[in-house]
Amino acid sequence: MKYVYPAILYADDGKVGVTVPDLPGCHTFGEDVADALFMAKDAVEMWLWNAENESLNIPNASKNLKVEPSESVTLIAADTDEYRKAHDTKSVKKTLTIPSWLNHRAEEANAPFSQILQEGLKAHLKIAQ
Image (tube, rainbow, N blue to C red; front, side, top):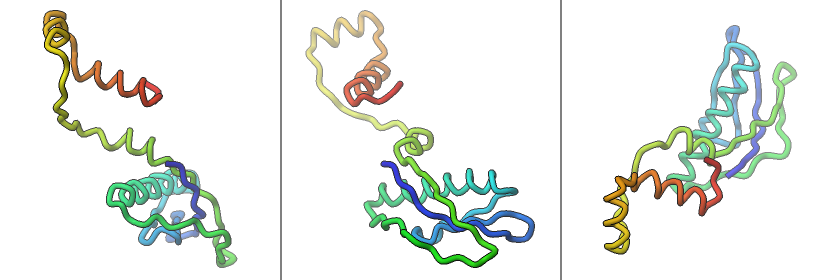
């Protein structure tokens, strides 16, 4: 899923702080603005990924945020599908059934069953390799 949330940037003890008011507890810091924005993207994606995994309510993004004169607002784009691909790499065992003749031929050819299944699922789901 793709999301966009407003974030507030502020100076904090020589660093740049970022808070995303719509996502409770979603705060991070960076050494400078660029670092803070990269950290914010990661924090937002992690927050949303966890909410999706736990079937939690995902809040709508605010339209207008009120900020102090020393603060600024920016938008953080998040893609939980990409985050999941990069961070959720654990393997899951699946039991499946194929015809005996096909199993015999595949075993004779030392076919890599898991790799072939993964490639086939990606192609079927139109997921870029």
